[in-house]
Image (cartoon, rainbow, N blue to C red; front, side, top):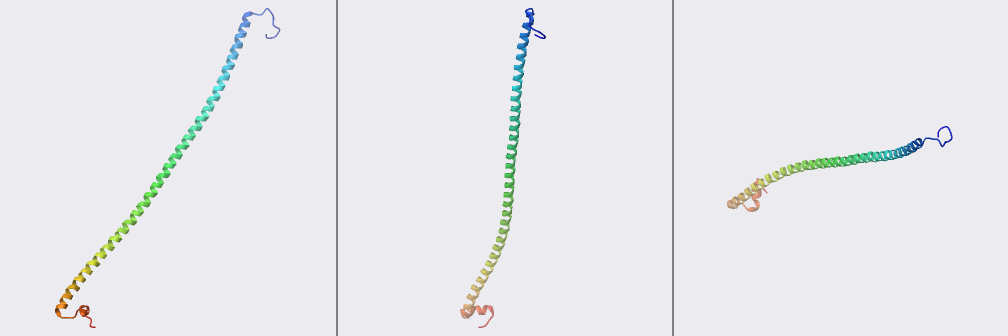
Length: 142
């Protein structure tokens, strides 16, 4: 009782009101405590959510970085393969040229063999000894 000793003459309605007020204050304090608890839970939840979002973003970046690295490797591999293909084309061209030279040489040798065969048969018919046919063909005398 404010300002003095309690008297037996106090208003009974007032004590009921004081009881209700005390109950209301207790309820408000409980509600405030619950709100503070809930606020703390929400802050923790927000922190966890923010951390998880950051982690997800980092994982996406790692995933994208791994994909970019894989793409770079594929480009590097493709570049190497292109270079190898170019080298092989060059080698193939060189081999074709060599093959053409060998074919030409073979044709020349075939013609020479045909000439030698014809000249041997004509030499043997002409009476020149076969040992001197080469000298006869080259025009040298031995």
